[in-house]
Every structure is written in C-alpha cells, then in structure tokens.
Image: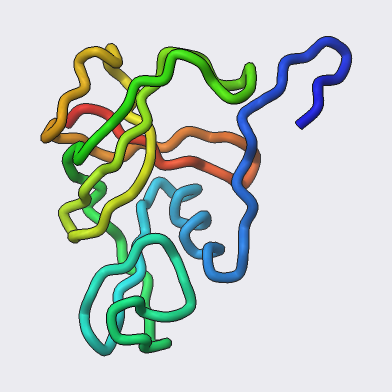
Length: 138
C-alpha cells in the first residue's frame, strides 16, 4: 500500500480466494474454522481444494476449539511497513486438532511468550470483511 496525504501504510489485508471464503466468513463470526477430510478424517490447515493426506476432494468445514500452544515464536522489533507496531510476536501455534497455524500472540508482553504456552484464539478486525485470527494467553 502506498502512503497518501502523509498517512502511514496500514497492515496488508489478506485477499479472499474461493477455497478460503468459508475460513474468512468464520473469522468474521468469531469462529476459527478448519477443513476436515470426510475420507481420511484428518484436519487441514491452510484451506485448500484437496486433502494433503489422501488427495480427497471431500472436505467439510468444522469449528476448531481455538485452543492450542506455542510451538515456536519470534519477537519482531521492526515491521515491514509502518502499520506493524513493534514489538510484536509471530508464532507457530499447534492447535488441539493437530494442525499448525502461523499467527500473532497478543494481549501480553512479548517477553512473556514461551514455547509451550497455552493460548486461545481471538480476532482482530482489519477491514469490513476480514477478521484476522490471533492468539492470547489461555
């Protein structure tokens, strides 16, 4: 995004695609939705057209518990655009359903984040249609 009238750039907003539409609808409703394969039973994240485990196209959307733990993380002291307010935490979160999601840990001092920390999902509104899943200490 370019800067206009002296305004700082904002955080880029993710673009919806056909395979991610339900995911973003769920986030807007305060639900973290995952795909689940109807053939092999595996949970899937990130959203896609085929199951990466068995290549089935028979996928359903299910609501995640939204609970997990920090697998790994890094604290960023400089953002790629002025819209990112440092310091902030980028983390890989292992959800209870067995999938891993990259997100931010918010709602605490970045120095308090630890590997194995229990977290739960929350949502941050980026635009009228996009709510981004983030995680807070559980």
